[in-house]
Length: 125
Ligand SMILES: [Zn+2]
Image (tube, rainbow, N blue to C red; front, side, top):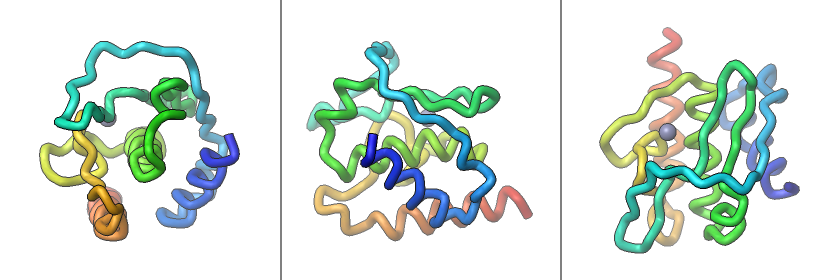
């Protein structure tokens, strides 16, 4: 859970939303049937958020075996729903469902976060 705590703090700093610290992230043995895998067998449909409960549930086994760059994107994706109220978009974006947008080497992460920030800021204007 240390990794999740670090990622949560990073997220709150990225989006400057400190009042959302009460969102809980739990790892559970859940199976979601909406996953469509990309060529490498990765899908973002391994978590969900319940905004009113301020709770994010992630597929424990899946999450623990996921490379760090995708753990980060999956958590940010769910926080995008839960903490920022963002919907899905069908383009290279953290909020794209089913397929990860992070490059293999993670080099576009800053770009993706900035894009997410822009969508969030545009929404709250
Ligand atoms: Zn989603």
